[in-house]
Length: 245
View 1: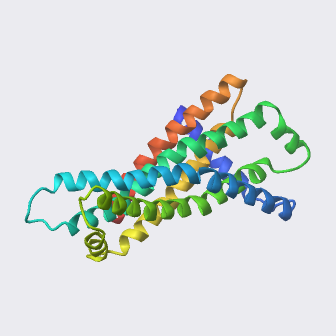
View 2 (view 1 turned 180 degrees about the vertical axis):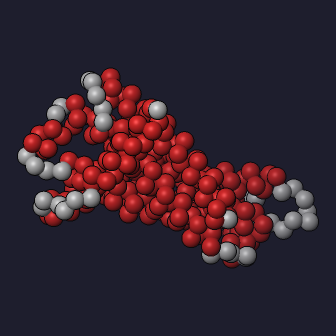
View 3 (view 1 turned 30 degrees about the vertical axis):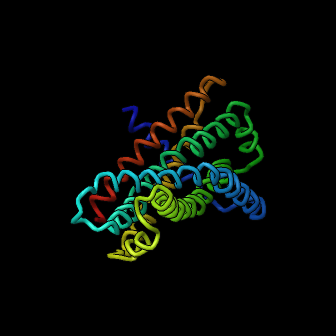
């Protein structure tokens, strides 16, 4: 019964966001602010993780392909498809669930505890629409962009690591990148990116918005938001792969 209670409250929260804004300029300002917080704020960790993901994937793939019958350009194909299909969308989204999700949950939880949300409601402002909707829109805009950047940096990191370690020359790696490229893989990665962006923005917003208690409950809500977001991202990852591949 607890699951259905939370799920119903989650759907009601999403439904309550869709009202006519009281002031379009304030909503736009909040949307831009959230784009900066979510996109620019998470960019350094995205860059670091993506480069090393590509580097590690190249080294481990070359270590496993020890047969002389397998051309070295195959390493680049495996790195390319692994980064685009799984590593950049899924691993990065799980990391962002901890970075972005905990921030959203703690921010809304602090506003709930300090009665700022109640003050907005008293003034006749739809707090769900003003506080949550810009965060979701910003996540849907910025997180797919971060995942695209991550894929590019991951492939570049794998190329650089292969050249620096002497595993695979850059011209052979570039040739492998162009071989057997399936453009649907890029579309599939974007499908996952938008799905994961919706999950890691709405779930923490729900936990933060419905906090009750004090500072201790804010910490618990942030932890629950990150855990539930990661689980849902993995479930959605499997579901999308089973349905679309």
